[in-house]
Each structure stands twice: as C-alpha cells, then as structure tokens.
Image 1 (cartoon, helix red, strand yellow):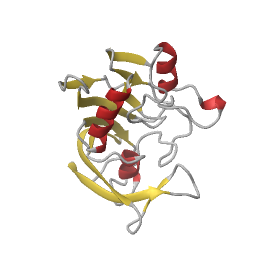
Image 2: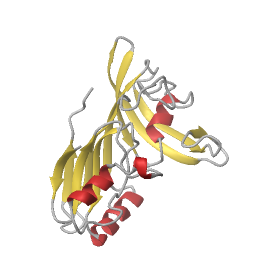
Image 3: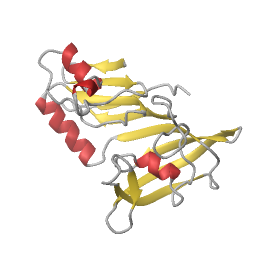
Image 4: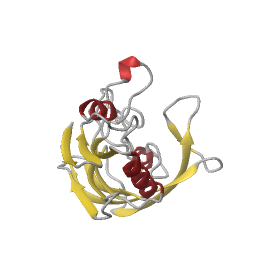
Length: 208
C-alpha cells in the first residue's frame, strides 16, 4: 500500500491487488487498508473508508480522518460526483470499440459475494467503456463507471449482455485461480476536497 496524498482531513492510497479495503469477518481478515490507516493515525475515525475497491482490484482509494470529512466525501460518492477511471485487461476481444453498458444485477444470496443479472429485482449499473489496444487476444480497456455497484465492472465485462469478455484472472466471473492477480486497476480518481472544496485529481500507474 502506497500513500499518494495526505493532509489532516483525508488520505489517498494506492491499494495492491489481493488486499482488503476494509476488514472482513473474523480476526484473520482484519488486515486491510482501513485497519492500517487507523493504526498509523491516532485519532482517526473507527471506520475511515468512504468507498471500497474489491480485494482483487488495485488502485486509488480515499479515506477520511474526521467525521466531517467522511460525511462530506460520502455525500459526493452517494451523489455520483467523483470521477473514477479504471483500466482492465479482458480475456478476449469485444465486438465493439466503445459504448455504454447498462445492466441490472443483484447479489446472489445463495452464493455471496457473486452478483447475478436480474431484470426484475436487480439495480441498474452503468459503465462507459472504450477499447485501448488488443494484443495476443487480450484487450486493454478504459472503464468509467457512472454508478458504484458491487462488482460492477467485473459483471459488465463478463456477462453476455455486457462485453461477454471477463477480466483477466477474475476469480469469480472469469478464469482466475489465485488472489491478487486480477487485471483491474483504479487509475484515476477526481473529487472535491471536503473542507476547501478544491477539485483534486489523483492518478496511479497501471501495473499491468
């Protein structure tokens, strides 16, 4: 985990793939970005995370030190104000070069945390995407999620009604077997500072 930016109100980190954003259930899953931030910053909120990245997703994550900062940032994320840009490698080549994916999906309560397509009970996820390059049957894509649903980019990539092409090494929706290998990276994050209201943009080099 690398610190990208820090002041008295918030911290932005670059999370590696295979590492939890927040503690999971049980003492063996306490090690996470949020837990380490709390340990390193006395007086930090008990729950500093404003948003999350899947364990197998790498990239930029913002956490708040104070209740005021957390509230202001949470409102931005609830209102879909922050701009998030991801890069991914897909295990195949989608037919189109760009587009917008709109798919309803929900948690499969019999198979957590797997998400399933559901036109009746699912909530809509919306993602803009475009093809960046193709090499040896692997496609590099730019993703811009307009909603922040759990596993949104992973479902939108893999499902036949999305791109029909799973993210490389995705252990849930693709052909991955080992944790920390999935090729999905949160490469850019833009939001307003919770106190100064200044627009902040952070970038992280794509590790694949």
